[in-house]
Amino acid sequence: MIRVGIAAYGIVPFSKEDKKIENLLMDSVAELFVKNPEIDKRDIDGVMVSTNSNSKYLGPIVAEMSGIQPKASVSIENLCSSGTNAIVSAYSYIASGLADMVLVTGAERFDSPGRVLDWDDSRGEFKQPVFWASLFTKSYKNQFSISEEDLAVVSVKNHKQAKNNPNALSGRIFSVKDVLSSKQVTEDLRLLDCSRLCTGSASVILASKDVMENFSTEPIWITGIGQKTTSAGFTKNNSFYSIKSAKDASNTALKMAKKDVTDIDAVELHDAFSVCEPMALESMGFSKNGKSIKLIKELHQTDNFKVNPRGGLMGAGHPLGATGIAQTIEIVQQLQERSGARQIDDVKAGLVHNMSAAATSSTVLVLEK
Amino acid sequence: MSFEERLGSGEFLIPKCSQCERIVWPPSEYCSSCFGKVGLERLDFEARIVEFSRENDKYFCIVEIERSFKIIAKADRILLAGEIVSISKCGVRNGNYFFEIN
Ligand SMILES: [Zn+2]
Image (tube, rainbow over all chains, first blue to last red; front, side, top):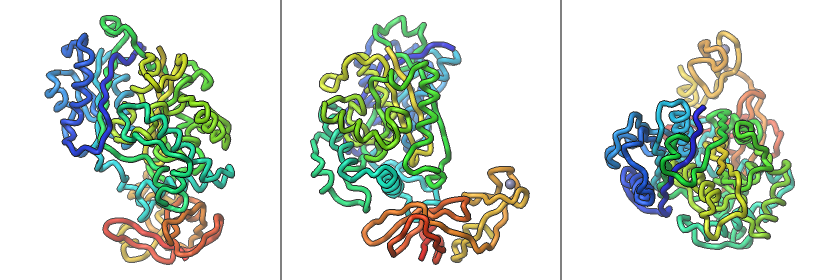
């Protein structure tokens, strides 16, 4: 199989801006090309767009607005994990030889139609994500005797880390007391336990090894990919305190990369709500079941940014179609030692975990220098 | 009539495959196991609380039906995990299903 890596990226600050999706996509595409003048647009033979927007024909639209005439141009939608799914599609085009260089761009508006899965009637009148998140939280707390205070550390840590991310939506620092006194959404969830939907745009260019050698001096390789869909409906989950899709996807990705979880130095995981961080860490093997709160507290107390260095979804904001791409860019920057105040020491391998619809599907990428 | 039409008139019927007799959830014309045609059965089914939380004074809970599939239902009283309950009210409101237990 042809080796595939990330050649360049572009990302702009997340916001609450009201802007047409076509123009939003172009924000990070333009940023990418302006910052990487060595890339010849004529070499790009694929354009993949990641969004939950209902706007049509966005692949060809982005191609035209960028002055590119690719072989393939297409939109990819898979709710919150559209971004990494678009990256996997681009990877597949290149690894198979169908394309050599693919632009992947993702964007979302703050009012995205992807915020609720209308199809999932098993949720009755409780279709908003806060309800599945509350039930996960209740189940996780009961199963492992975890308190509301324990979980609040996730939000405190990730907002603190986001403070060092110039593209993050949140610029504020919160204490455990702030989290516990924020608005009670349900019995098991506070406002500061939730990530916020926002407007955002992020782009990457993937290239084959042969093409990469022509221009990139610090390519980052995608060495592992794992994906798992267990269902579409929330209530099909068998466990409400662990994430089967994350476990299976990370096992597959690590196996492909010939890595052990202990080899991973930086992780961007899908903390849509506080409880998702310990659940994902445990399901992917970074900690024993029920023990990751201890790890999260240690990381926070020692200012170790290993988990969600850019602030995760909670601190950075969650523009659905851009999230997986922004997570990937963070790991690329960490590997290139370009993360400024967020830089983790000596990163050799990083992992991205992006999931959808109450953990019913996950995509995991392993990236290396 | 479809599951949804029955639900709309306040009746919770169990979708079952006419070929392999498995319960099929979510309701569909085709069995997710063998793609046989799915019919509806009027059943005195078991409903058990799996997990619950609360929004203001309204409880919402995961209910497992016939040890086969799960839905989220509303309740206006304190619940216990593992408790056996029954669906007291159900229907379709503004295009959304709703389920209540007592
Ligand atoms: Zn069947």
